Image (tube, rainbow, N blue to C red; front, side, top):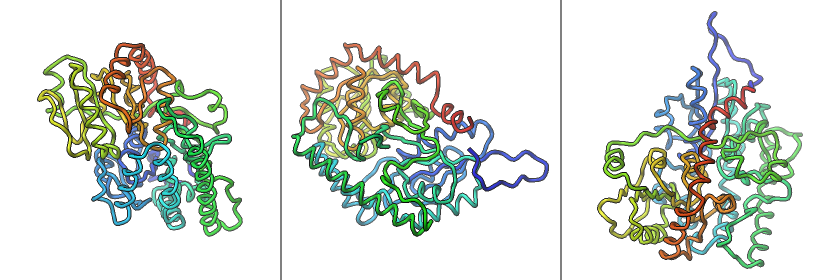
Length: 444
């Protein structure tokens, strides 16, 4: 998918191909995109990542070149804390955490309202900045995070072909009569009143229309006379790449997608450090791995319930505590740290207790690990519903679950068919790494 701008060739040598990766300044977004890019790096080609300063260390760790590109007010180098965000973003993050305590609909309403300002930040100038980077880098292929709306607007205006990577559940790109922000499915544990769901659907439609109007206003500045969008949330690149296993996606919905490739997963190499390696080698009992990701670890109250549920099970426990505070004391042989090398731990895990973020879900499935999912927000509800429907685990409401409920769910998952089903899915994902699928799709 070459950029129609031409690239210079130095002397009589063969120029290396260049891949440009565009990512928001969030580790959870950049890590799978960077993993995809390693397929180009291993082929001896150049990779340039355009992102913000918070994740510069991740770019350097992969050995990629970097171009400065700020796509939003917030950032997250690995574990997000409200007090580390700029003024305004800190309050927004605290508001989000507060909303999660009131349940699915309240959280989705909060996120819908926030979407009016957080997904299309400074669109005209950000679009121009992206085109400046394209002129400087002169890439052969471009890969963009689907949620980088301002960047994708710039590429569309500039006529630059690009691959659009959906890093969350595929419902992040609405198809058919879906409305962005309103989950097409959610687990049986969530039973909101029909009136609340109707109000949420109405709000999501209003936000869609306002967002589209903002997109079109920027489009008129950047490209007067361009055809306006009907639904900016449904805009997409020349090739859609979904960081998700095709086996978990409804075939009827797949038929509605634009040209696409299911990557399955984009699991990076992440070796265990000395402490984790020693902990794993000290005992061969099954491990329960617990992580609520970089954001939702702030819900320390739910994490405390998980720890209480795990005490009587007699399993080894590793917990990525993130930003959680006030956690209870745990047995001395448990491993608790703010950050743990998840990819290194999952192959030893018997089950993952997770918030249902797409990175965690796809990494667990690649390792053949079933899940107990406690979804809090956005596409986590649809993802948890898919896990439940596929027999890969259980989904519970984090705001109502008790330690007894959670313990029973863990035992049911461990003793039921979910482990075997997860191993079958994992074997398929291991045969076709997402990074290789992505490169083949782009070069094909």
